Every structure is written in C-alpha cells, then in structure tokens.
Amino acid sequence: MRWDSLRLDEGPPGGPAGSGPAAPALFERDAVARTFDTPGFRGMTFFEVHARSIINQVPEASRMSFRWTINPYRGCSHSCAYCFARSSHTYLDLDSGHDFNSKIVVKVNAPVLARRELASPKWQGEHVAMGTNVDCYQRAEGRYRLMPGIIGALRDAANPFSILTKGTLILRDLELLAEAAEVTDVGLNVSVGFVDKEISRSVEPGTPAPERRLEVCAGITARGLRCGVLMGPVLPFLTDSPGQLEATVRLIAEAGAASVTPIVLHLRPGAREWFLLWLRENFPDLVDSYRDLYARGAYTPRAYQERIAGQVRELAKRYGVGRASPRQARRGTQPQGPSSPRAGRAAPGADPAVEPAGPVQLSLL
Image 1 (cartoon, rainbow, N blue to C red):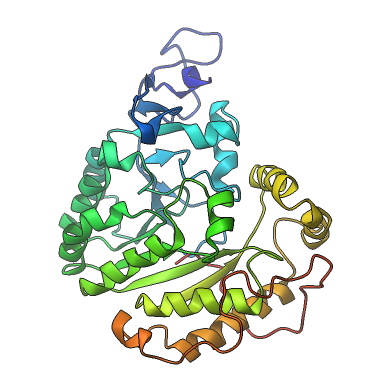
Image 2: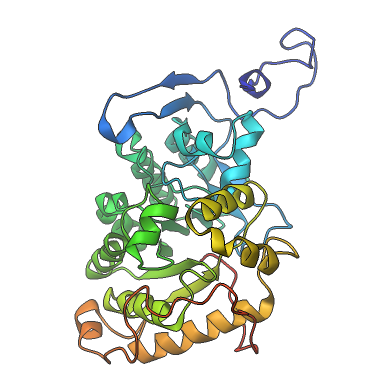
C-alpha cells in the first residue's frame, strides 16, 4: 500500500524526510488499521488517517453542479457494483473491486478540519456537497460518528450544504439538520434508482433496501425538511421498463419526495469492469447489449437518457411528486398498467434509443 507517499514530512523519492519538496500529501501521518469482530464489520479493514484538508474542490472538467465537497470516507461498504468512485481507490494501490468494498479509509479528523477550514478568511462560504463520491452515511459512520461534527461546523458557520445518501443513519442527525436549516440552505436527497428488491440485493448488496431508503425520505419530510430523490442509477434493460419506472416513481411520491431526478447508469473505468463482471455473472444474456449501448464511452446515447427523463417527468406529474405529503400522495392517482417492479422488463435485443422527450438532468443534486 502506498501510504509512504501520503506523509506531509516526506522528501522526494529516495531522499530523507524533509530534504526537499514533496508531492502534495493526502494524509498527515501513517494510517492505523483496525478490524472489528462484529457482524456488520466482519471481513472489513478500516484505515484511520489524519487528512491534510477536508473541503475539496471539484475538478473543472466534472459534470457536477457544485464546486466543493467533503468526503470523510474513501471506499464504501454499500458495495454497489456500479459505483463511479471505485477508481479512486487505485490511487492508494488498492483495487477498485473487493478492496473498495472492504478497505475503508476513515478521515478521523474530518470534523476538526471542517470547522477550521470554514472559519478561514480565505473561505468564501460556497455550497458544500456531501455523499456525492462515496456515502457519508455508510456503515462505518455508525461507529466513527464523523457527520454530527461536520454538520455542526456547517451549521455554526451558516454555510449552505447538501447531502446525498443511501443510508438510514441520516435520521440519527435529523435534529442537527433541522437546526442547520434554520440558518442556511440545506439540501437533502436519498438515492433510490429502482424498487426491485431482488436486483437491489444483488447489485448494491450493502445498502438498505429501497423501501427503507424511501422511509428515510418520509421521515425527513415529516420533520418539516424538504427531501428529494435521486432516481439513479436506472439500469438499462433491467430497471427501465415503463412498469418499473412507474412503480419507482409512485413509491417516491408516496414518500413525500420534494423532487425526483432520474440518472441513467454511467460506467467509468473501474466501475465499468466491476459492473460488467456482475452482469456476466447474473445476466449473461445482457452483456452484448450493454457493450453496444456503452460502445462510445461511459454514457448511454442522449436519446435514451432523454426518453427516461421524459417518462419520469410525466410520472412525477401524474403522482404529484413535490405537491403532496406522504399521506396525501398515498391517496392520489392509482397506477395504470403494470405496477410490479419487475413488470415489463425490456427484452435483451430491444433498442433503447428513441425520439428525444426533452432535456435531461445530469447533476446529482
């Protein structure tokens, strides 16, 4: 593991510590590796590190709509086969597959750094996004409890922020979030790409079930805070049929979501190899269809994305996403046509590219 290249006091390669300029360090000192003999953490290793900084600037080439992030963890026990952050683990000489799922870097000084950097005269009070790389409410957060300190620092600085999560642990911090929302803009979103339980258990095995994530949305809404749903990823040929999309949007509406933003699966290096391995093991008949659909790169053709966005937009209107409380939504329009999450699965040979249905949203929040 390449921890030696991550020390602040290191000189150039081959030279003594402090003998000359070094590459920018990620961590202040060596990691402490820990394992915990409890069912939820069995088989996992946590590398506790002291980060050099915690508020990170997003590269200009990114498609994200925000410029700054806080990521208290690297690697993620959610183990989503499609996670685009997988390749970031290779920077530490860890692999983007099993290591990403089971070897988690924990920035134990994240709350202290957040408070210090938010108080710096150089900081301009810009929006900070969390959970957009790996989930800040993954399983490790239950033990390390880094988020309360981070949220408290953002609250005390009245600094706008947003959180995207698949985790239910966010409900633990609901009162802190409500306090922050009294003094600044707080954006809360849960990620639920589909409600097919069988596919969820297979492709995102470490996450809470989709219905539990929607219960999180309902709980946040019941507290008087707005919560949107990132409906992603939509998996071509697996969760993109009209019946599946309708079932997902209907349950999103019943949870009282303030908005729904569909995101079609994208396959960057690292995630691409791991997802295709999962696909080959579980749906071998779809491998060629995926290779054709993603032949030009990480993203599906724009026409396909626009079709999904158009369908979700119409379904959101039908079920009143953003217009109703959870109770009101459950009294709304009943679904038309197939409502089973697996109903109407697209045939492997079907062409998903159709006429554009309108603009597509690619931002996470």
